[in-house]
Amino acid sequence: MTSFMQRTYELLRQVPKGRVTTYKELAHASGTKAYRAVGHAMRHNPYSFIDCEDKNQQIPCHRVVATNGAIGGFMGKTTGKAIDLKVALLEQEGINVENAKVIDFGNKLFTAAEFK
DNA sequence: CGGTTGACCAAGT
DNA sequence: GACTTGGCCAACC
Image 1 (cartoon, rainbow, N blue to C red):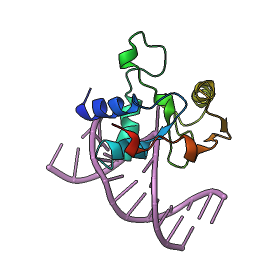
Image 2 (image 1 turned 45 degrees about the vertical axis):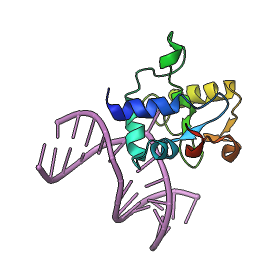
Image 3 (image 1 turned 90 degrees about the horizontal axis):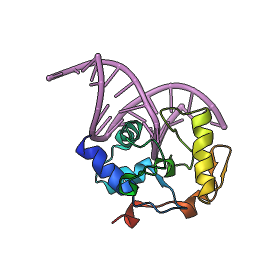
Image 4 (image 1 turned 180 degrees about the horizontal axis):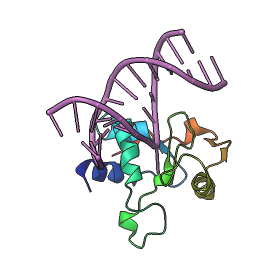
């Protein structure tokens, strides 16, 4: 676990249910421009998704999408069932997705300015 | 210590 | 629209 990843996760945990954020916003909020590194951090995510016993360490990685509102990837893949699962999780939280893109993305986006 | 590879992005063709 | 290019930073050869 690197400090960069810790910082990224801590930010990500601040994203409330029903909102989404992007790799870019996370990177910006953590004071870097390493969009790609954020993706890398997610791939090494210790809690692939929900239902971790310890809520304090739970990381809502399914709330991270690409900047243009596309779903991006999940569990190491950019296509396939992992994406379907990610979409299902999002819809479960009130975020509608169609054709692998978040609907009303601009309104649901959790921007860097909203992080603590 | 260089080179490659990303759950990426933006601008140009 | 779709490709291609250059750039970003961390992790891994």
